[in-house]
Amino acid sequence: MIKQKRKSKVRLVLLIIFTLLGFYNGLVTRKYTVKTDKLLGNQSIRIVLISDLHSHIYGKNQSKIANKIKKQNPDIIALAGDIADDMVPIEGTELFLKAIKDIAPVFYVTGNHEIWTGEVDNIKEIFRSFNINVLENDYKEVNINGIKLVIGGVDDPYIIRYKRPKSDWHEEIYEAFLNIDSSSSYNILLSHRPEEVNLYNSLSFDMVLSGHSHGGQLRIPFILNGLFAPDQGFFPKYAGGLYEHENYTHVVSRGVSFNPRLPRIFNPPEIVVIDIQGK
Ligand SMILES: [Fe+2]
Image: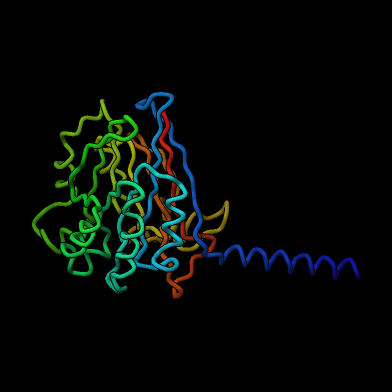
């Protein structure tokens, strides 16, 4: 009888711990290391990837999230879309950009929610006013730590529906990056959508950085990597994590969105840190 009671208590405690862990929504830092023979053995680059902020504010003037990013000492900060939102005031985005703009060079692409504002050009101007590199189906060549990088970025596909209804998003992107030389540089693409793997496979990028999936909202450790993601549906293949494809490495951020009406379960908001190292 006493043994039985003790067992029940242990079960209850385990259930409480499991539930607390499941609903933990503090910012976490997730790290990936990617090896490439395009870099020398002693060379490396550190990228911090942030996606899907949706203008949420983390601490006074975004200090909580900015301090965590700064602590990682990144060479580049990549913003993979949905940083601003069509339903949330822009203030959170402005505070965020102000807080991170001097940590490292920042590169940004739009997500669907920025385009849904109907004022995507104004939003891009706000990003530019904080010295953020706005990539819109184009790329920049940069040299970091003596390493030649091509950093490309694409607008979210909704840009076509809102601004260029007679165009083809896939075609535009394919043409935009046709002339990139993949032999002498390490090439990184920012694109909000994780599900466009066939398109990315046809381009000359070594790494693609995405968001949009919010980690599939609900996860069960070791069993289910996401229940539902926009544009992928139930049990999304690319809910979040690192995926090795034929021609590139894909890092999909689970994002830093926080919406009390849509709880994240076993899926805390994450700051992604990627170390690209020479072999
Ligand atoms: Fe999105």
